[in-house]
Amino acid sequence: MSSFVLHPGAVRDLEDIWEYIGARSIEAADRVLEEIYGAISELVAFPYQGHVRLDLSSRPIRFQVVRSLLIAYAPQEKPLLILAVIDGRRHPRVLAALLRERT
Image (tube, rainbow, N blue to C red; front, side):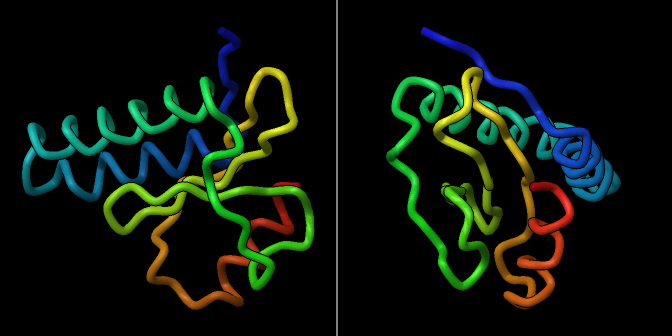
């Protein structure tokens, strides 16, 4: 089984998520990150299980939902490239702009 790499922006995303949640509960922040990494591990095994969002990118990027977060990744990359972990409730134009910067 191959592994994954995090885009530098995705590393910042995860740090921001942990800090935001951790301000209220360190245990909750740890649990959310465990869920995210668990989902990423599943994507490594089955990279095409996520869905396509043509409203966010015309590039071959897929998305997997964890809670209200979107994991944006490039399934064709080896190792799997995690581009972003972002709040899926944000406006689609904001999400699309962020993804353009990272691809």
